[in-house]
Amino acid sequence: GRPRGGMGHILDWTVDDVCAWLCYHAQLPQYAEAFREGGVDGPMLLELDEANMGEDLGVRSAEHRRRVAALARGVALKAAGDS
Image 1 (cartoon, rainbow, N blue to C red):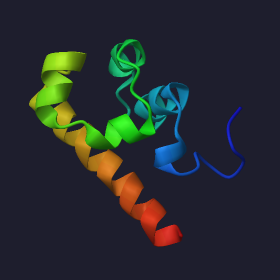
Image 2 (image 1 turned 90 degrees about the vertical axis):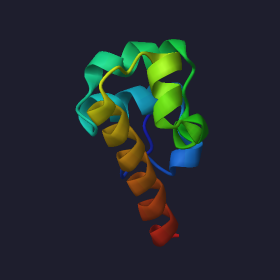
Image 3 (image 1 turned 45 degrees about the horizontal axis):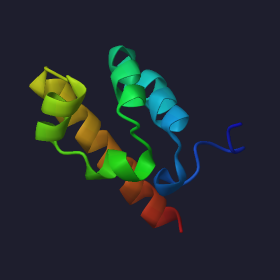
Image 4 (image 1 turned 180 degrees about the vertical axis):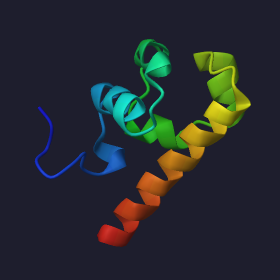
């Protein structure tokens, strides 16, 4: 189930939430399976750096790694601003 009114705080995201975010917000559905297999939840998403994404999750495009990292930080900052 999805919390009403959006995704909730990134630190509360499940692996499913991260995969949905990758598909619909980051527009990078091709990586959802790798993130699922890697068990990437919200807190882990925030910890990922570009090297982790390339080596551990197979995100080969540097542009895509930057996009995921920047969007994840943006979600965290927005959540911090909302509280």
